[in-house]
Amino acid sequence: MPEPRDPQAVPTDLRDRLAAVAADPATRPVLVALDFDGTLAPLQDDPAASRILPAGVEVLADLAALDGVALALVSGRAMADLHALAQVPPGTYLVGSHGAERARVTQFGLDRDVVELTHQQADLLAALGARASAVARGRDGVWVETKPTAVVVHTRLAEPSDAEPAEAEALALGTELGVGTLHGKDVVELTVLPADKGTALQALRHELGAPVVLYAGDDVTDEHAFAALDDQDVTVKVGTGQTVARFRVADPEAGVAALAVLRDALA
Image 1 (tube, rainbow, N blue to C red):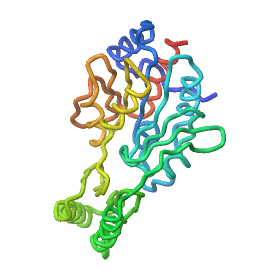
Image 2 (tube, rainbow, N blue to C red):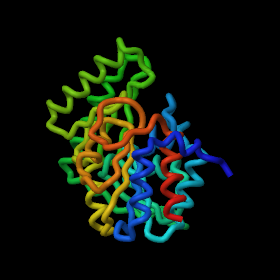
Image 3 (cartoon, one colour):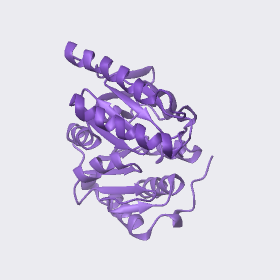
Image 4 (spheres, rainbow, N blue to C red):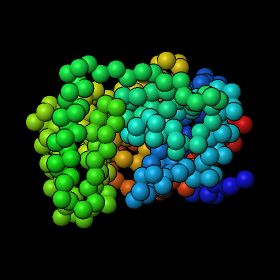
């Protein structure tokens, strides 16, 4: 079985908070909700190459098997993409497209909430796709992804001389067309069905009746989730950068180690 990094990689204040959550029966069910890329899966230049760390796959399976724990992945990825790469146990909630898509993993596939667009939204999505393609055209390393509710301009593979103007033009396009805009690490997402991780996380929390939520993420879009949670919740920033999260770990390996600390305390 893959072993997560030494628990000593987890800051003392975070280990103490996880132990306190585990020791208090009033926290059940605990909702363990996690970003995917950069949090459970190290960032890759090719998004299709992203995989949860092997130790993370084991820890998530262990957590899902415990009474009083609900597990969710909350990602900017489209649902089909997230499900194909996630390697999570049945019962896990998947929140895709920053909250615009939701499903639950079963033994037989996905039990999905259907996303329906109005004719006006569908036409706007088509227009976004055409305009975003024009932003990417002629710029090496800039490419466009189309989701069921959004269009995403990716710049991770581009040099700054191409990435910066592409992101600026994508942001201006969002303003011009009046659509929802999310500016993350090397991405600009333009959505016809506004959604954010904080709203999606709070909806899931209330549905499950979870007194405490643990949420970990690495991107600026995860700040919506951190800000939506309360003082009794456990918010963990993975990596560097400004954040409103209460705790921080260095990288996905340390994040998985923190999950192992919670698992061991609960078990």
